[in-house]
Structures are given as structure tokens and as C-alpha cells.
Length: 410
Image (tube, rainbow, N blue to C red; front, side, top):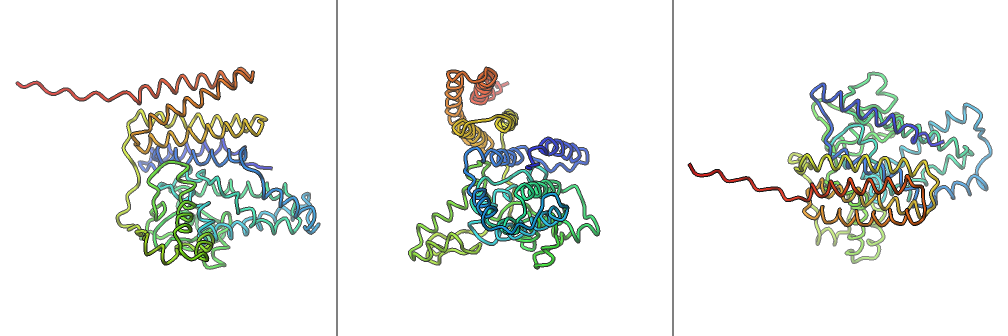
């Protein structure tokens, strides 16, 4: 059973409580633009299942049917304990290689792009991890652990990881030695030299201590969050694809065909020598790091929050409704277009209004299709209300700002 869906209301409540606590203590760790960007990626990650095919799930099915050892019974407590521990062990290696191999980093990097560290960061998830991540859990199916047990312990593992994404919880004494905590996970999200590529465990920090990847959080070296090649955008498409794009460019420009192939499975930081010479990449100086925070108006921030609420509600409707594949793809596309357009406003792009009007026109077409297909009245009526509210908001945002009046000469 996938328990993550049922935990979403608790996630939202916890985010609101953390925000309120930070404001009360005078140590707010949230910025609206960064948090909206993270939550957009989270909703797109949950909506991915409406457009992708479960290749990994089919391979799991074949393994279970023809190759697994019939040793595990889902009704026995030992099966659940073993599955919970083994899942975290497999996750450790997936996570570790996700920082050591570029093609896996390309899928994982979205989770690390946030330059803040709060509970919304936990929901900043990739939409491309399904391409290879399933490989790391094959041992569980080979052992004969039932699929429903794997899915359930996997969701418990993910839910546990939510609470460690906060700056408000200090070190927890003996608990730090066994389990992943906010302190040792802050290290994992930091881009400081000392902290880079450390603390990969999901639930148990024991794996890091065992395999030499543990690093304690130090008071004299406070974590600086984000990635060394900063994204400088809230665009979810760029967030999900920029490493793939970099790899494709390096592969295209490499002269040696072996280098063209090696790019796709090279260790982090490796580039073909000829490509590095022609297209060098400047290494970021952490001492000059500044959070990406383009100035925007209060109206833009309100508009971004409105769109966030919209895509979250849309995701909830999609998950609660039996949709055809075509309908799922269209709604996912509308969600993606909305997040990209909103990111344009948060990035302060001059073309944001024009692109948003085009998005609105496309959504209007979807509403017309829904009406002609005689879908539920509530569905197209909700779409119509959204269009009207969105159009009014865009009229306000697109209106030219009046120039200040010149003071008359005395």
C-alpha cells in the first residue's frame, strides 16, 4: 500500500506549523518563491504516473513470477522487519550512486536545488527517477518479498525522511548514532566542501558509518544549502532536465566515440578532455554564494500561491478519479504548463504575461472539450471558474505600472 497519498494532509499541516514556529521564533526558513518551486516539483512527481509506463513494475512482476525465492510470507512479522531494513540498505546505494554517477545525479539533482532547508524541501522530488531507480530494489523481489510489502515499507521510508528536512531540530543525542536525523541530513543537503556527498541513509545512518560516508554537522561550519552549479530559475522543466542537457551537449561535442558513450555513465565531475578544453565550466566560489531571489511584487507572490493551490487541488482530483490515459496526459500537461508559466513570473521574466495568456488559451480549449464530451458538470464548471479568476489576475499583473508624478516646482 502506498501510504504517501494519505500522509499528504499531515505534510501540509507540518509545513504550516514549521512556518508559524519560525515566524514566532524570529527564524523563518521559508521564502515563497523557493517553497513554491519545491512544491511544484512535488506535485509533478506525484502526477508522473499518469503519463509514464511502469517498466520497473513489469520487470518486478517477471522476477516474482519466474525467479524469486518463495521464502517470504507477508503475514509474518519477520518479513516486514527484513523488508524495512533491506529497503533502506538498497536505498542507501541508490542514493549514494545518485551522487557519484552523473546519469543518476541527473534524476536526483532536483531534490538538492533548493537553497533553503525546510519541510517543503522534502517534497521537492524528481519526475525522472523511475528510469533507473527500480534496478536497486531487484534484490528484494529475488528474495521473494511480496510486492505489497515492498511498496508499503518504501512509502514508510519516504514518510520518515520528511521530518528530517528542518533547521529547527537540534542534535538528538544517542539517536544520531543509529537513525537519520535533521542534523545529519542537513549535512547531506549542504554544498560545503566538508559536507559534500555524505550521509546517504534514508532511515538508518548506520550504513554511512559502516561504509565511510558519515559526516557530523559542525557548529564551526554551518551548512550552505543548494548545488554548486546553481539553477538560477524556478522553472521545473529546467530543474528536471538541466543535467541531462549538459550530458547530451558533452556527448555531442566529444570527438572520441568512447567518450560520447562514457559521458552517460561517468563519475561525477568527469568530462571528455577535449570538451573541457573547449567548453570549460567555472567552479562556483562558495564564499560568494548568494541565494537566488529575484525581486517580484506582492501581486506576483499572491498569484504564485494561487497557482500552487490550484495544482495541488488538481492533483487531488486526478488521484481520486478514474481517468483514461489520454485525460491523464492532458491534465498533466495543463499542470506542467501552469507550473512553468508561474515560474516565469517568479523569475521576473518579461515574457511571463504573454506565455501565461497562451497557457490560458490552451486550458480554455480543454474546458470546451470537457463540455462537448459531456463530462461531469462540476469538472468543466470548475475549469470555467479557474479561467475567469486567472484572466482577472493576469489583467492586473499585465497592467502597466504608472510612472510616479513629478513634483511641481515651487
